[in-house]
Length: 528
Image 1 (cartoon, rainbow, N blue to C red):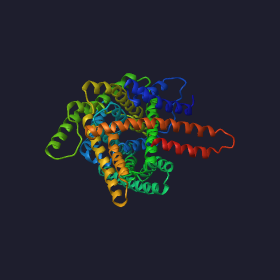
Image 2: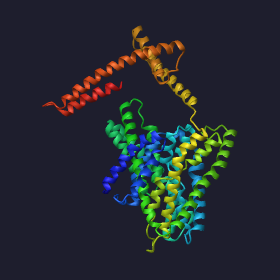
Image 3: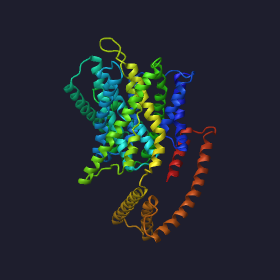
Image 4: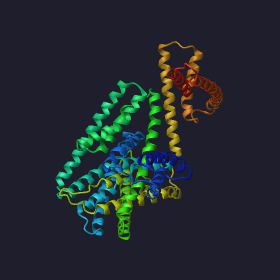
């Protein structure tokens, strides 16, 4: 098996792992990691040969962009305090404690190298957290906080990592310079993200074609990441800024086809790239194992100690942080989503899995120092990092569904239905207002006006069947049954039409482009 065949195996696994995970209640990223481990130990599978400095730029931009599409700037601002406590403060605390413990147990490990180890294992993986949380039916407030933490903690961790690596390679460290680099990195990233978001938004208006617009959304995250990195900014923060800008300002309510096609496209990209990313983590375990030859007991002990530190520090931090947030929330009128019980706090703790970013940063550690000597304890750092990834991703990922079920942490379906009903009412009222505005300037027959008014009610009732009183609901249900029958018959008619047009594609003299154009018209008609 060559590298290309291995890539196709990972892509196939990414597709298959989703229904398998749904069937057995297991997260797809964890299954892909296990598949990667299985491939890594097989003799016929080659070692993965991907330059470490290409892993983050190749995989992280589309994953971050896909994750941001599911959220909004309003959600981040509403949860700024818990996100800051987790994505910034907790990363610093975890880095410091891991660096202290690693320096104490690994003989001769320099402080800068220990800090680099702490930084690369500190951030929970945003892809793993959102993928796992989204499948378990967790309360939306927990999912929002986990998404925010996962998206922003990489920014802090990667900057800390680069500072530590620079100090280790050069042998010098300046705290004022490090703080200045951190601030400049953030400023450059935000500036690049906003500029590219604005430019992409304007370009989408000029393109005016769904295919080209969606293709542009695939290129923009990469451009944002690469440009920010070239200007010594944070590529991760630049992608987040660009994605949030486009999510907020590049949405046209009437551009139905682009929205539907874009949603499907990014679901496909998210599924495939996530699968490949976590499959590569499992495959890279082979290289980590090779570094431990002859020192298994010692290095496994170090890895187990750091796993314990990472897990326990998160718990020890979350308990008082959650209590403090609750106190502040109770005293002031903050519109925040916070854990409401110790059970939700425990789920947040156990959801702190490490993944793509940690693996890429571990592999990106340079081989040599500025003076040409080997990077100190690089093999040990890589092995410990992969021990943390496997210990958290596999163990916590496989047991999190059981823990959620055991603790009974579930989304509040009542409040979700109430919000859905409120949106349905707003949608129906908006449709009615527009109908009244049209009636003011156009003379409509009474029968047509009543029919359109019923359809305005149907807009809301189709979203929330509980809308309206009993009599109106019954009338809507009767119309719905009648429309269902009409749609069924119309669907069969359109199916016959599509089969006939598709058959014409194979006839002599038929122009495939014209056939496909007619077929697209029928497909769009089928969506109505």
